[in-house]
Amino acid sequence: MADQSPKQTVDELRDMVVNYAKQETVDPLKRLGMWAGFGIAGAMCLAIGAFLVGLGLLRLLQSMDWSDGNWSWAPYLIVFALVVALIAACVVAMTRTPEWLQED
Image (cartoon, rainbow, N blue to C red):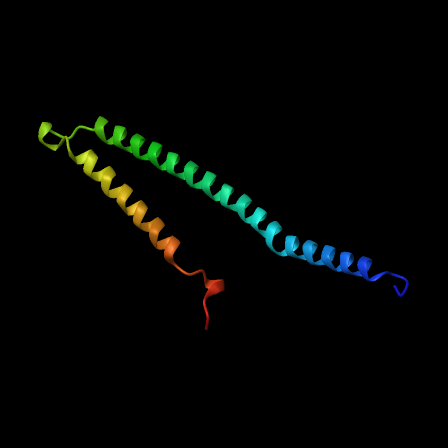
């Protein structure tokens, strides 16, 4: 170490600072982007699945005999209420603070 020139020492220090900055900023952001991509893909899959389940439930309820034609709107109202309840449950789950983050 004693035989290094000041320029080599400054270059080594600069390299260490640049590598540390990359390690502490760029790499975590890349991992965050990967997890965000998984979250978006999962949300899309859940939305498509919820839509298909709602559509299937609607078709099931429409195939039932609702006496005369006066109750033809009932399956739509039932499915709408269930979808709204599902959305409300998702909003509550998203806004709730996880137990591991709560302060005592």
